[in-house]
Length: 121
Image (tube, rainbow, N blue to C red; front, side, top):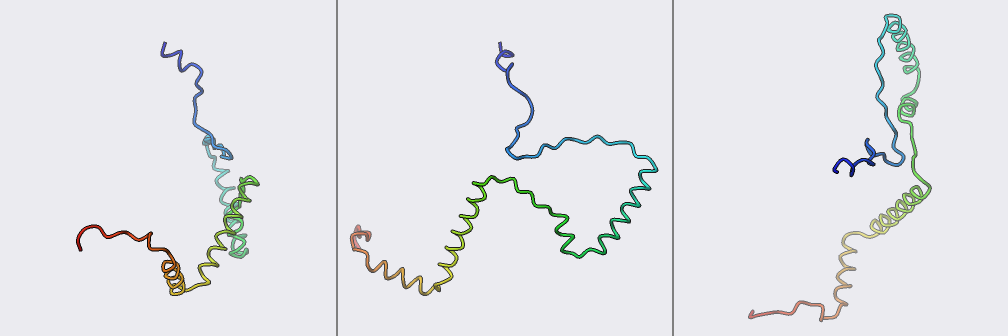
C-alpha cells in the first residue's frame, strides 16, 4: 500500500527558473600529444594577455549575463530611482536641521498624546 502512494512521484532535484543545468563531464584519457599542444596554446594565450590592456582583461573574464524579465528590470530601475531620491532628501539637510524640524513637529502635537503620570511622585 505504501509503495502505491509514491508511484507517481518524479525523482531528481528541483530546477529554478533561469537556472543553468550543469552536467558532469567525463574525464578523457590524455595523450602526450595533447599535452604538448595545450602547452603551446597556453604560451600563445600568455603572449596575447601581455599585449592587452588591464581593462580588456577584466571585460573578457567577466561576461554579463542578464536572465531578468522586463518587469524585473523595471522594478530594479524604479527601486534605484527611489533610493536616489531618498538619499538626495537626506543629504539636503544637516543633522541639526533635522532635529530642529522634529522638535517643532513634537511641540505642535496636542497634550493628549503624552503619557499620564500614574502613582505618587
